[in-house]
Amino acid sequence: MLLRFVPVPFPRPLRFHVIRFDSVSKRYASGHQALSALSFRIQAGEMVFVTGHSGAGKSTLLKLIALIERASAGAIEVAGNNLASVRGRRIARLRRNLGMVFQDHRLLMDRSVGENVALPLIIAGVPADERARRVRAALDKVGLLAYEKQPPVTLSTGEQQRVGIARAIVAKPALIIADEPTGNLDPQLSYEIMQLFAEFQRVGTTVLIASHDLPLLKRMKQRTIVLDHGRLVADVPAAEIA
Amino acid sequence: MSAIAKPVTPSARERHRSRVAIWREQHAWACAASVRALAARPFGTVLTVAVMGLALALPLAFYLLLCNVQRLSGSLSESQAIGIFLKPSADAVSANALAKRLRARTDIADLVVKTPQQGLSELAAMQGFGEALQTMPDNPLPFVLLAQPRPGLSRAQTEALVGVLRTLPEVDMVQDDGAWRARLDAFIALGQRVTLLLAALLAAAALLVVGNTVRLDIRARAEELVVQRLVGASAGFVRRPFLYEGLWYGGLAGAIAAGLVALLEWGLAEPVRALTASYAGRLVFDGLPIFELLLVPLAAALLGWTGAWLASTRHLSPANPH
Image 1 (cartoon, chains in turn purple, cyan):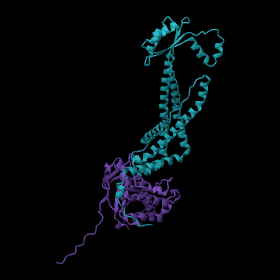
Image 2: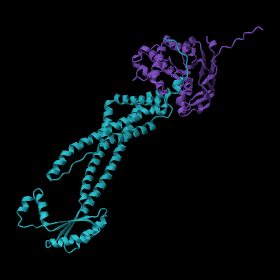
Image 3: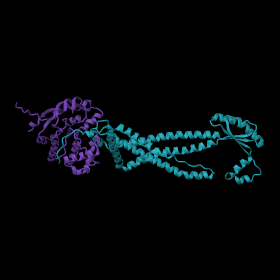
Image 4: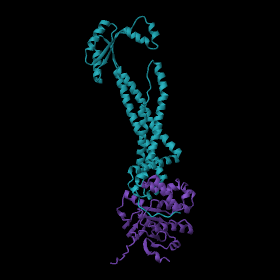
């Protein structure tokens, strides 16, 4: 009998939702309605941009994911955690699995570049030798290995942003969120930074970036969620980005 | 740039790493961070430590003086005999007869008879009396009985005994050293209370100094604390460097206070010796035992830690970095 060759399916990464927003609203104590009934899903390994004018709710969305703010209504799930039930020590634990990048870098200017990047590993209790290895690897990825011992103040704005990115990836998070990471950079430098994020996405990291730089978003050709006054007005797949 | 590694979960080695090792490493980091924070503002640190050191030295100095007064009082209590001065007409026979009667009492532990000659000899041995006594034609001193009350006798019982002795026909005068000793005891008790209150007040002041310093430090390092929170630091991790700061402040201040008291001991020992020598005395100004001196920085460190804990609990937000 002729044995029929049955091809075994190539193992593919499980496609699960890393982020799920279900009718999420956020109203600040001042009465400002930042988000209204926002619903979307982001799958593992996706790179997604959130865009909109100032006050559209981009930063609020990221703050809700990082548990800096709490939703007024609706449900948010991040990596299988219902954020409404995440309290106390679990908040810190959840943040350790997030890589956060900020527009103003938020670096400690009295510490060296290496010490800044090492901070999440110290918090996570990674041993010193392993820590040093990972810090050098992260700095190497962002092209700043030579600056490990220097204070951040001696670096340019673009380089400081790359230190911030190295700090965000050093603990190997499954999800990176970035709030206007190219806000203060020129177009070419902005594109280079975005390429760096795209590289992380290509190896399976989920990346969510808030940006109002439309030309850059068009150039990156990734899924884009458009917000306006806290409402989702468009969720454009990567293929439809002109 | 090297190739980017795939994101991976922490290795088995990391996951199973001893919690103690992590604890030790994070404490070492917090300790280094606290030293760096103190070194970053040397003038402020020295000023804070000096103020606390002086505040702690004051009750400690009182305690030292009190210890010496107590020691003096203790040595006096050993010789708190009741002096029974007999009438000048009393001779050796009647003095010994009375002594025999008194020794039979249960409230008298011991009794010594001092003859006029013995009294004169003792007086002559005291500085400044020798020449004066030589000018006297005869011995004016009476027989004296020195009665040692039974140990454990209450003040009321001693006074009752003195009252009985005063009624005896052979007795001219009874001198009760216990009366002024009771006054001295009362003064010492008052001194102890004042020292305790002073120590409590100044310890509270030291606590507030540390608390306020840590509060200001938390405000100055707000940005760093926000970053720590955002990258996943627990409340304990954020708080730890401030607790170490409190320990340093307290420990250093305690060491200064102990040093100042040691200086006080050294400074007073010689003048006290010279003063007592001029009265033919042998009073020695004793310092605090080394154990107690070592205990001061430890207790002060605990005080500093408490102040820092109170301030950090009050001023560090539990989870929200904003």
